[in-house]
Amino acid sequence: MFGGEIVNADSRQVYRGMSIGTGMPPHDSLKRVPHHLYGFLDPSQRYSAARFAADAARITRDICMRGKLAIIVGGTGFYIEALTGRMPLDRPPPDEALRARLRLESSVHPPKFLWDWLRVKAPSIAAGARPSDSYRILRGLERAMSDVLPDRLERDACSDIRFVVVRMSLPREELRRRIALRVHEMFRAGLMQEARTVRAGAPGAPALSGLGYTEALALWDGCATEQEAIRRTIARTEQYSKRQETWFRHMRDVPIIDALDEERATASIVALARERLVPA
Image (cartoon, rainbow, N blue to C red; front, side, top):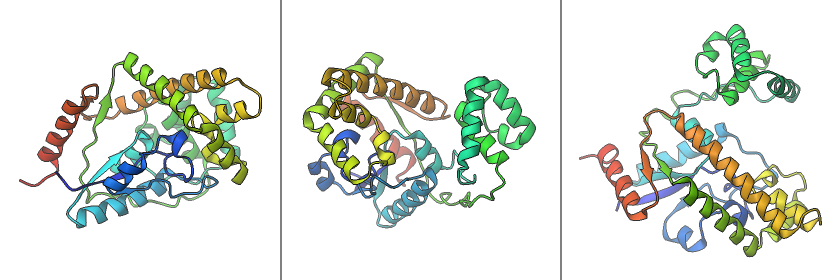
C-alpha cells in the first residue's frame, strides 16, 4: 500500500542468535517485507540509544529517498524518543563509579529529593525532567556531575524526517493472557538451548539480561524448575510491560490505538499515515 519497510526499535531484537527469546519476526515475515536492524549485532556487544538513533536515521533516510515509507516498530521507548528528538543524547559516556553512587543515592532518597539536587547542580537539565521521573533525574545528575566532555549527537540530526508516533494499547487482562501464552511458547520453542548457546559464546553478554534468558539459564543450571522459570519470566514481563506503558504515557500528543481488533487498528494506522505523512 505504501511500499513500507520495517525498522526495528527493540533493544534486544538487534542481537544475532536470539530470535526465540526476543520475539523476532518469523522468517516468512522477514522475507515478505524488507526489515532493518534485526539480528545484526553480536550478543557480547552493547548497543546504545545514541547509536540506534544514528543507525535508524540513516536507514530511514535511505528508505525515504527510495520513495518508500519507513515503519519503525518496537517497544523500547528510549530508542524511539532518541530517534524522534524527544530525548537529548548529548550526555557523557557512563562513569561506572559515578553511576554506582547515584544508584545508592536513589535507593535512599525519593525522586523529588534527587530532582531538587539536580535543580541545584544543573537547573536547565532539571527543567527537562519531572520531579517523579527517576530515570531522567539520574541520567541528568550523571551528566551534570561528570567531568567528561560528551560526544555530542547533533540535535538536528533527524530534523529533516517527519515522524508520527503511535501507541498500541490492549486491555490489561488481554495483555496478561498474551504474555503468558508467549512465554510458554518461548520455552517450548527452545529458549533454554538458545540461552545456553549465547552464554557459551559470550558468558558475560549484556544481551543475556533480556527477559527469559536468566530464567532459562537457571533452569539449565538446576536452580529452578521449568514451572518456576516460566512463572518468573511471566512476572518479569508483566512488570516490564507496566514500565513501558508508563514511559509511553509520558509522551505527549501520541495517538493511542486499540490493538484488540487488528483490522481496525491497521485501518487507523493507515489513515494516520495518509493524513500526516503521505503528500496529497
